[in-house]
Image (cartoon, rainbow, N blue to C red; front, side, top):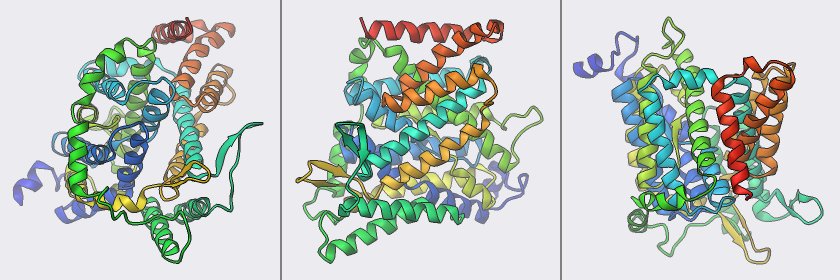
Length: 458
């Protein structure tokens, strides 16, 4: 045990093995919701469900192990919310990429992230983009994710007259989803750190009971072998390495720059923000105001993204849920190693997905996800909190920030929202006579986004 104490610097950081193990378990329980949510999200893009579940668990485990052993930080990683929505609804749904090409894009963004992490480009990029735009992107993704959650719940539906409208709130699957949303909001408001995982489990149990009592379109155990472990490993064979087959399609797409930049941008700044937040909480910020071993933490993130792309999932990022483990006393990479081990063990929980799986109503021709939709709504709600960081008296930020959020939601595209914000930021600054305040990198990015728009509409 002495080598563990020495390697992870337990005494130096005022912690113990037992404290780190409890912290790791706490963090895992707080973020375990990503296993079903990410699996069903990416399965919607066409990736075999079992392959996504396996990739989610393994990519999270590998990235978190690197974070633990290499960076020695109590921060866990997994495929990121927002990025998985961008993968499914924008890359595959709107831009019509195959899921193989979308995985290729994730791999390229991971490689670029790695190169940035080991070079001086990290500070140049961070300093070039105004903070207000970074917050607008995060908040916009929050609105976007929450919207998807409400659609999956059947609460928001297509409407011929108004494009969107309120769904049938008397539908049993919608009522179950509403129960889940109320439950997660109540638990979160009460300060429960495990609100998401409890709400998913609680909603599934209520659905099972109602199903036994005769209520239609409720969650149920699959008894046809669809969710057997053998089926999962069969799906892994259909998924792993498929990203390499999508490079040709990816680089022939007119919006290839927008695709890769958006993946890189969101992943990079999501990670940077999370690292600073949890670093402050853990007391691991150095005299320069940076996280201890920040470059190692970013490398862990990029390795997770590259690994995930190869085996079948979207970008991996650092999780703010790591704060729950830090609250329990986690201060070293040993808590991260604990999380990684639990993700590996969770592979064998794949059969439970049959309960969490959504239901299809043939009468309406509509698919409902009542057990997991609340996760998207709550995560979106938390991300929208970044709006408070924007200087609402600065027109140079407010206008591009507003356009970023608005276009992200109305075009159903995270990439389009980011592009609009980046294009209009220098335009507004020039109109204000403050063109010198705009970093040269921002001028270049604005021009590239504009060219991308022109090419896609030619």
